[in-house]
Image (cartoon, rainbow, N blue to C red; front, side, top):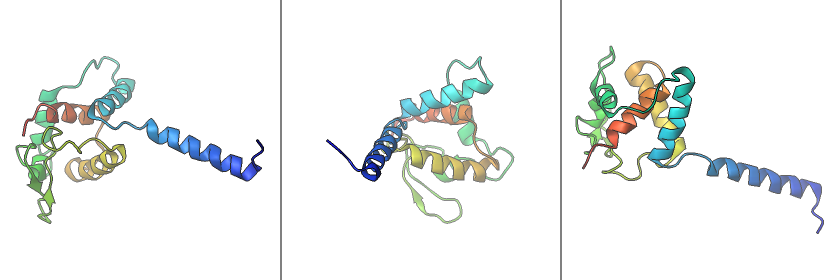
Length: 140
């Protein structure tokens, strides 16, 4: 069967875009695997993420007024509210909110925004993985 060249190119681009989206991590385990591979580039000795480091990261202010718990509360299995706007925030722990950490684009967006607010910089892959390791231990 013959396809005009522009149509064939469009189909090829659509298939390529679809395969890229399909390869995007969409579960906490897939996100952690991707972050572990990335973290090992700068720390080859890293074997696993730490829920304890993640818990500490979550509750520490990192030299500013805010910590993750400032908005997400000390119990990320419950809802919170933004420290300034008071906009309600759904629970962060995946056990309490299965939609959390299921969309890689949203995860990137919120880590990007919140890490800059709390740390004044981007979170490292190790920090993200440790935080998620902690959140996976939190029950609603």
